[in-house]
Amino acid sequence: MSVRRLSDASLMGALALLVLLCMVDLAICSSNFTDQLALLSFKSSIKNDPNNVTSNWTKETNFCGWAGVICSRRRQRVASLHLRNMGLEGTISPHVDNLSFLQLLDLGNNSFYGHLTDEIGHLHRLKTLYLFLNMLEGNIPPGLHHCQRLEVISLAHNKFSGRIPKELSTLPSLGFLALGFNYLTGPIPPAIFNKSSMVKIILTANAFSGNLPTNNGLFLPNLEVLLLDLNQLTGNIPSSLCNSSKLTMLSLASNLFTGLVPKQLGHLKHVEVLQLFQNQLTNEPGSIELSFLTDLTNCTSLVRLEVQENKLSGTLPNSIGNLSNSLEILSVSVNQLIGTIPKEIGSLRNLNVLDLADNNLNGNIPSTLGEIKSLQRLYLGGNNFHGSIPNEICLLSNLGELYAEYNKLSGSIPSCIENLRGLQVMRLSHNKLTFIPSSLWNLETLRDMNLSFNSLGGSLDPNIRPSKVLEIVDLSWNQISGSIPRVIGSFQSLTSLNLSRNSFSGPIPNTMGNLITLDYLDFSHNNLSGQIPKSLEALSHIQYMNFSCNKLAGEIPNEGPFMNLTSRSFMENEALCGNSILKVPPCASNSTPRSR
Ligand SMILES: *[C@@H]1O[C@H](CO)[C@@H](O)[C@H](O)[C@H]1NC(C)=O
Ligand SMILES: *[C@@H]1O[C@H](CO)[C@@H](O)[C@H](O)[C@H]1NC(C)=O
Ligand SMILES: *[C@@H]1O[C@H](CO)[C@@H](O)[C@H](O)[C@H]1NC(C)=O
Ligand SMILES: *[C@@H]1O[C@H](CO)[C@@H](O)[C@H](O)[C@H]1NC(C)=O
Ligand SMILES: *[C@@H]1O[C@H](CO)[C@@H](O)[C@H](O)[C@H]1NC(C)=O
Ligand SMILES: *[C@@H]1O[C@H](CO)[C@@H](O)[C@H](O)[C@H]1NC(C)=O
Ligand SMILES: *[C@@H]1O[C@H](CO)[C@@H](O)[C@H](O)[C@H]1NC(C)=O
Ligand SMILES: *[C@@H]1O[C@H](CO)[C@@H](O)[C@H](O)[C@H]1NC(C)=O
Ligand SMILES: *[C@@H]1O[C@H](CO)[C@@H](O)[C@H](O)[C@H]1NC(C)=O
Ligand SMILES: *[C@@H]1O[C@H](CO)[C@@H](O)[C@H](O)[C@H]1NC(C)=O
Ligand SMILES: *[C@@H]1O[C@H](CO)[C@@H](O)[C@H](O)[C@H]1NC(C)=O
Ligand SMILES: *[C@@H]1O[C@H](CO)[C@@H](O)[C@H](O)[C@H]1NC(C)=O
Image (cartoon, protein in one colour):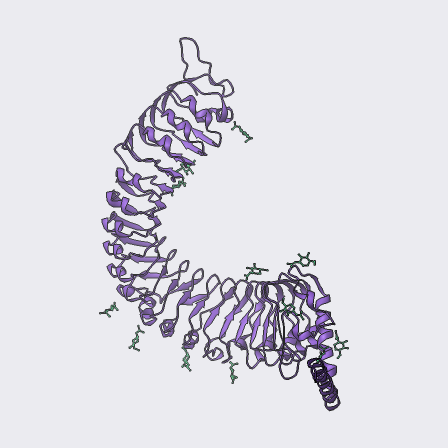
């Protein structure tokens, strides 16, 4: 027997088997035809398929081999449709409901628009529905609850509106409900919070309102993730939430929650992310300490703890140092905390971000902060810290941002500050600092330096090192004297320079004409003398210049940015003259009138 005849024979065999099957069960033959029709109908409502995924969806081939289609082995019926990240544009044909063996539908991250119809409820075997990142609108179809085997519903990042159909909470196996970033409103059906099957509930960034169910109504023993942030939820945080001992992520941030931070939060032994910020939470009235921090010391996996922008009061407990070794972000800013920073804070060795800003904290900045070697951002502004900045701050070799403005810090900025090799932003305005060490200018990465409103005196070292990256320098409202270092003309990235309200004297360096990136320049209220250098005419970016209240004299440059200035920029000087547009009197041959 030839090979050819052998294969013919096996083909005949297959056909015979098919005929036999069809005789045994007519449904099998007709039904896989139904799947083909349903898929072709699905294809026909796709208006754009940039990756040609459905181009081999043709009648000539078995649909079980079509791109994205997976059939059940036994029945040759479509079991899953994987079309994630394909750039597909169009509507979802209601005929997908004829894929009656479908278990998984993944159309995530495409551009499907229009409504999701109630027919989806015919997919009785559906377990997993991923439609996230599309442009679907209208209501979430209540019919979805007929898909009683559903475990995963992911509709996040669409334009769904209306309420969550309360029927969804009857789905017995639902474990993952992600509806974040839609336009959903109304209360969240309370029964969703009384489902032992739930593992992840993500409802971030909608307009949900109302209260969460209280104690008995909240039973989520398997919950791992609960994200309800960016909604308009009200009422208390139910303490029974703390019975969900498997929780790893809890965000209730940016809502309207009131009442106490539940003491039982410490029961969440596995919690990694705890975000309660931007609410109106309080601690027990009259409490001396922010005691829930102590309660959290058993949460040994905690990585982020963010409770800023609430109404928390009391002191930071010493046990703050007993928080998780894994803690990377600790934010308690914009509350009503009092007292000092406990020295124990130095034990939080893995902290990246420490935000204590805008409270009523006082005392010294503890030297133990220097032990937090991993610290990248330190926010202490808007408190009443006094004393000098401890030298130990210079040990924070990873520090990128130091904000301590609006305090009462005094003394010199430590000269070891140059050790902060990665410092980019330093905002120390509104303190009582008295001295700028010249080493400060050695910070090669510093972009933004604001030392305004201090008591800085002395003069700037003429030999400071020019910075390639410094963009913003604000030294205004101090008592700095001496001349403006000529080297400032080499600060090649400078966009804003404010030296106003000091006692700078001597001439404006003509090197300043090199600062072509400069937008703002304020020299007002100093004792500068001599002429305004004509080189400044080259500052083509400049939007604002102020030379007023100095002892400048001579002819005001006429070209470039000087054509747009008003006389306010030059008032109260010794003897400026010569710019007719500004109505500054002309420079007479021997008398130089005072400008006004
Ligand atoms: C879906 O099934 C219904 C009834 O079984 C049928 O009328 C309809 O034509 C089918 N649609 C497609 C696209 O196959
Ligand atoms: C899809 O097919 C069209 C027409 O055959 C072709 O021009 C285009 O390059 C194809 N796109 C991709 C991503 O293969
Ligand atoms: C229906 O199933 C049979 C047997 O599995 C297969 O050979 C046939 O190609 C299928 N029909 C369609 C339209 O895909
Ligand atoms: C259709 O395209 C997919 C992806 O390129 C490929 O895996 C599959 O074999 C093709 N199917 C047919 C029937 O050509
Ligand atoms: C979405 O899909 C596109 C390709 O179509 C891909 O480039 C992009 O990274 C995907 N986005 C997400 C969030 O997965
Ligand atoms: C929560 O669910 C349980 C079991 O399904 C039920 O017995 C109980 O009445 C529900 N509680 C509330 C407050 O709805
Ligand atoms: C759940 O929490 C509430 C309030 O915190 C408590 O009264 C109750 O005993 C807890 N239930 C379980 C099963 O742990
Ligand atoms: C931490 O856990 C231990 C052991 O379970 C317990 O004795 C202690 O009271 C807990 N501490 C806090 C602050 O909850
Ligand atoms: C912090 O932990 C240490 C060592 O486990 C313990 O001795 C100390 O009492 C704790 N401090 C507070 C305030 O809980
Ligand atoms: C410097 O800080 C002061 C006070 O916080 C603020 O008013 C000023 O705008 C800041 N300067 C710059 C250039 O941002
Ligand atoms: C200094 O000048 C800059 C640029 O005009 C401005 O943004 C800043 O607010 C000024 N500083 C103060 C303390 O006013
Ligand atoms: C003057 O201001 C106008 C409008 O703000 C602007 O278009 C023009 O470039 C400026 N001229 C100079 C020389 O800065």
